[in-house]
Length: 326
Ligand SMILES: NC(=O)c1ccc[n+]([C@@H]2O[C@H](COP(=O)([O-])OP(=O)(O)OC[C@H]3O[C@@H](n4cnc5c(N)ncnc54)[C@H](OP(=O)(O)O)[C@@H]3O)[C@@H](O)[C@H]2O)c1
Image (cartoon, rainbow, N blue to C red; front, side):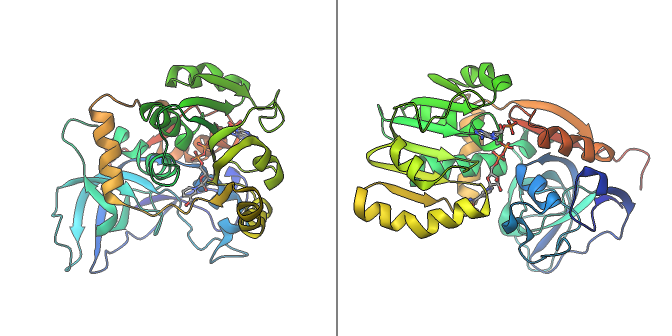
């Protein structure tokens, strides 16, 4: 099969289209003929090896040579303990435990997959899993957003932020979205009540305070976040530099004790019910999905570069064509 492979960390230039052996599913796995796979910042992090936590299990060389975690496709083969799926089923899910989605075929644990709703396309199903579940667990479960609360999403124009803005609005919050100049119109179209251009304004220094801050790009000190929180407010870092996340782990509990404000890392738990819930919200028209661009498998390096350059609004999706191939 064809796959986009990287054997060292670096820019998209290190990626190669290669002929590799098709994976064989283990007893609790499903082999999927990939039809669509979306690009996440976690793929960029896995490619560049930065932040440092992206090198988990492979300090000098990538542990996973084929990236790609949000996949949708057809079941080609099932392991002998798989009960929920059979050959030909259309499925999707976040396979970040195994990765391998930038390929013709990928193996996934049965428990990470859901049946694709008949009315939805593969590319739509590939665009939702990781960002949707991050946003749901951040806004609904950890954030416990209530009507009238002030919520700020930092990095609101990306894969997780797009859903977080809409979910916070759905739960009745007054929402501020922060992202770069080119994405401000997009944030408004998602329903953000206020927008902040991070290239012009630091949201931790403008005197505003929030009940909840969901931050996909934690790059400030915990003291700045403390300042931007209302009394009893909560801040959750979804992603960010290793140094910032370490500082949060170290000083968050102390800030909780001394200032009564919660500053924590959001550890997202893969959850099929959450994934299905997000799909249902979307099918019901309560949230929208924005796919900025579509690429082919051979164009994965361009797609990753587009994300790395900071141009993606919402998501980009790779469409895997199998025509003229075995
Ligand atoms: N905690 C967990 O369990 C968990 C689970 C899954 C994923 N993650 C992490 O979650 C993060 C989620 O990313 P995503 O997929 O939503 O990424 P994304 O699609 O790249 O979105 C990030 C957004 O943040 C913007 N941004 C960059 N610098 C900024 C700044 N200084 N201030 C405000 N916004 C800024 C980016 O804009 P530009 O275009 O300007 O760069 C982009 O629009 C990743 O780091 C991933 O590793 C964490």
